[in-house]
Length: 235
Image (cartoon, rainbow, N blue to C red; front, side, top):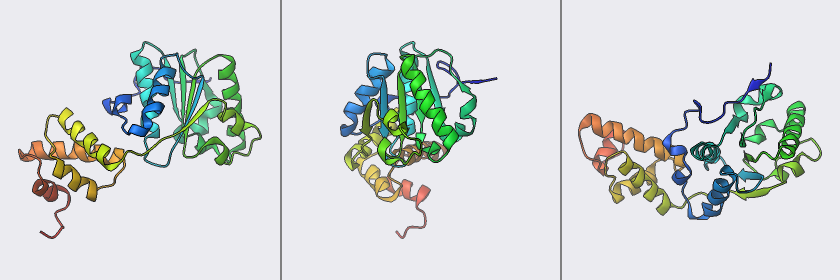
């Protein structure tokens, strides 16, 4: 029996960070606009987003579903790193948006490459918008099936840009404020200089700081951050 993909609004557990407005970087404004239009049913029939690890591909993929649900539309999200083994079982109920995350997980898998090729064709025939993500643009992924790269490039292909340091600092301070605490500018700079710099890691750091400050009943400062995360640093 075909596996029916979950469609929003359902229990995909899309948290507040998976909203399009939570994705930062001035160079990504066009990308966000196109995703918003597509999820609302007003934009491109197919979008292909590519970027290196930790650039926010999954954030954007889930954000598209989240936004579609807010607009009263149904969306199907498929994380292919997790679901590729069951790709031949996937069946779609009628929905307004299909999102395939990490399509490069299928490279070199002949059967799954064909299933992806067939799925793209079917969705196009049904006029169902499709959003895809991968590390590299279609032509560089190395799919073995002839014509699959051309199918993946049927629509608009966009690179995801990493935000600059100023945008990351603003992002951390805004997320701290949303959690109800103040992150001073100099403390945000201190964190950025010492932590993994991808957005996912920075979000996790803000969450950890929130819990630590509540537990210790202390305001956020460089000495407090040092005591929580970097106690082995020389003073």
